[in-house]
Every structure is written in C-alpha cells, then in structure tokens.
Amino acid sequence: MIFRQLFDPQSSTYSYLLADERSREAILIDPVFEQARRDRALLAELNLKLTHTLETHVHADHVTGAWLLKQRLGNRIALAAAGGAQGADLLLAHGERVSFGARYVEARETPGHTNGCMTYVLDDESMAFTGDALLIRGCGRTDFQQGSARTLYRSVHSQIFTLPPGCLLYPGHDYRGLTVTSVDEERRLNPRLGQGIGEGDFAGYMNNLGLPHPKQIDVAVPANLKCGRMDETPAQFDEPTWAPLTFTFAGIWEITPQGLEEVANEVQVLDVRETNEYQGPLGHIAHAKLIPLGELTARGGELNKEKPVVAVCRSGARSAQACVILQRAGFKDVANLAGGMLRWRGEGLAVAGGRQ
Ligand SMILES: N[C@@H](CCC(=O)N[C@@H](CS)C(=O)NCC(=O)O)C(=O)O
Ligand SMILES: [Fe+2]
Image (cartoon, rainbow, N blue to C red; front, side, top):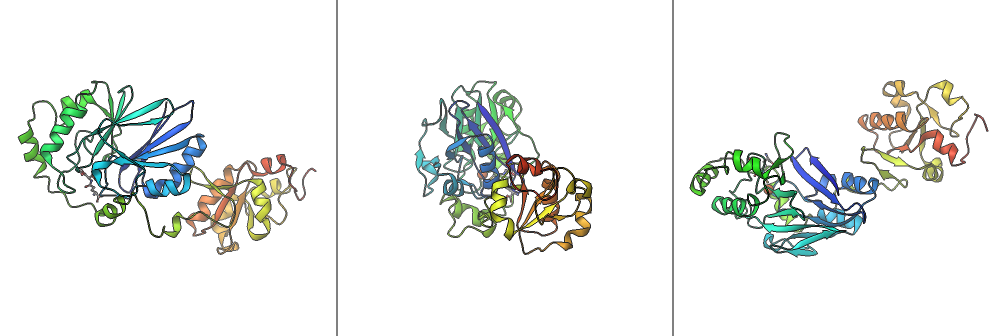
C-alpha cells in the first residue's frame, strides 16, 4: 500500500493519502482546502486516481478540501451520516467500508469530540485514523459541536482501545509536531484516557480545559456543513490561465517545452544560466533575457511584473530556484521550464546560437 501523511501548518491538521499499489486507486482522509493544489500534485506525481475523500468529522478549525478536490478531480465525497453535512456522495454509517482497489477502510463511529466523528480503520487493523477522537497523548476537546466528554470516553475505550496493541494511530491534528502513536502506547500512557482513568475523572479533566474557540470556527463550520463548497472560490485557488501549467509537489509551477513554445510571444523568457552557457553549445531560446541566477535578486527590476515569466536553465533546477526568488519579489505569474534547455533541445524545438 502507498501511504503518505501530509501536514497543513496553519491549522496543524494531518491529511492522509492511502492508495492501492496495483489499481492506483487512492483515498484522502481529511484534506484541507488550502492544500488541495498540493494534494493534487502528489496524486498526479504518484500516478494515483482519487476515488474518495473522507472526513473524520465536521471540522471547526479549517475548511475541508473535499469539494474543491471534487471540482478538479471528480472524486466522491464520503463522510459520517451523523455529521449532518450537505453535499456528500456517500453518507457513512458504523461498519461501512470504503474501498480503494483491493484495500478498504472501515468506518467506526467515535462520537464525543463532535456528535458525528468517525475513526477509519485499515482492513488489516494495522492503522487507524482517529480524527480528533484520540490525539497523541491527548484527545479532541468536547466543548462544542454537540461534544460530550462521557461519550468520547466510551468511544475511545470501545472502538479504538479494542484494536490490536500494535495498531498505529494517526491523529487529525498535532500541535507539537508528533506524528504517530499506537494503541498500546495510548492505552498505557494517554494522560486523559490511559490506564486506570475512569469516565468521571476524564469528564472532570475535559470540562476544565478552558481552551479558546478555534480562530476559524465561524467560517469553518458553515463551510464544512457544505463539504467545503464555496459560492465563489478565492482567486488564489483558481487555475492559472496564461499558459498550460502543472503544479508540482515541490511547490513550483511548471511548463513543458511544447507549452512554452505556444505562449513564447506572450511571456518573458528568462534564462538564468551563466553568460558562457547562454552563448555555449546548447544555445538559448530566441529573445530569452539573460540574468544569471546569482544576479537575479539584484536585477529583478529589469523584468516586467505585469507579464508572466518563464525561467529557463540547463536542466530545470536553477530555474526552479529562480521561480522562488521571483515569487518572493512579488511576481504573480511565474513558471519553470521543465527539463530546461536539455529537454527543449531533446524535443527538437528551435534554438538561437549553439550547436545546431
Ligand atoms: N488554536 C487552534 C485551536 C484548535 C482546536 O481547538 N482544535 C481542536 C480540534 S478541532 C481540539 O480539540 N484541540 C485540542 C487541544 O487543543 O488540546 C485554532 O485556533 O485553530
Ligand atoms: Fe476537530
């Protein structure tokens, strides 16, 4: 199985990608709206087809990426029937399975953090995704969204602590950077729910947490009750239209040689190699402006910020860094020529100068 743990630093949320190696079918648990582009890049780079997004609950602190991913990829949206959200394709009840290729996860109702929380258990019980029912040495708060400390205590004990001791537990959040735990560890060491702690002790602990409400709660809950659907997607999440671009998991927009050839007259082609390379055997793209990478920070003003820039180098590595520098300097439309001059020439496209 293919497995990736992904992190959203703004809300300290984990998303989980699980995929079946043979069929390449994938599911994504708890995607984050702002990370949808990154998640799509990873799916594409790993050659995976997203069949479903799954929510562990209606989140209060971030907006789900479910709807945005569905707009772009056509996947189905699955979540707990008990959560009360509109716009899902699959409303899950306790014990239902969601398959991806030859694998599946089973949904287990674990209410208490909210009234509609689900834990997803992998078919062989080697992993479970607990959302905010159980966090690493902690648990989700129980003071809003019909939360209940006593309900949470029973959920964790009956549905999570009964899994095999070696079962790895992956939480919905961690605020300290911890990534994974196990059933055995949490049964022994969880300071709220571990060995010997009774339901009354737990309720006393939880009812005195005194946490401020999540900053995003007033935006996140209404949006998540619609699976993250927006009436108008904020402009920064629209796809660029100035050229056929691909976003990479490395965080860079890329253009293919063919794509650049189509738009070459409407963009600024920036060559960031050294002068001797520009004039050397590989040649350069006609009218490309030469600014060696080391001079780009100082000489960025020679480029027009209003016109898209495509950065070029020998192999595509230095030009990727040029894109980062330009973005930091406030250029909005920037892309990297994938594979650089080597690929440009390899695809038989025209060069100025160089060895013909
Ligand atoms: N400071 C965070 C708080 C987020 C928060 O309250 N998270 C919930 C999960 S949605 C929780 O249960 N946190 C447990 C804790 O902070 O101990 C924010 O504003 O977003
Ligand atoms: Fe939560």
